[in-house]
Length: 281
Image (cartoon, rainbow, N blue to C red; front, side, top):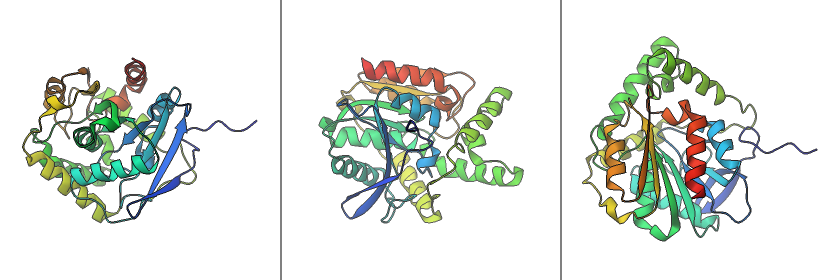
């Protein structure tokens, strides 16, 4: 019997678009439904996606995740604006031959998703926007300071920075962080390359510019949107999540208690159930 394809063993493939070889992984129900394209967070490569979230959504949907240009195993020079990352994502989606997609963006990926919906509205059916906020939102331009402070904290304590950046320092948050980080190690073979320092710096520049940008008119985004975060997000302050849901005319909001930036990973069972119900409607 052939082994079931999961996030732990799905092969990494490559598709070329606009001179870039995009590394991606694809799995799930490829039976004519709308593909769900995952858009990753700051410094993320393919192996930073929570296997429970990927496999949970792939149980009912065609799921595709890819490395941004110049990140992980994708070639090219890394983009230093959210707008360029959105253009690259659109190039990738079209190179895959998809006529319409659902977008699932986490953190920086949620900002990229908003840009795609504004640039190419017909390409997008539904949006899942998590741990993210609108352009010009409070605290977004300071992400570099928060991230680098927690990188230092993590180095001094021998921890993974995501333990600090994604989870609260309460007993529940600390346990959730340990469990999440363990899940990220479940794939042991053919793992992705980590992000290079230059690409990380380019992404910080993009986030800083996005945080200083004038607010976009999100009333133009008519697609249904599922918006979620933890109630204590230090990276993209949770006030942004409320604001985003308020400004999107067709949104529903979930805020997880005693949870930080990675609230959807802490409450992955609930989040996957909500995401599946949202996508099925």
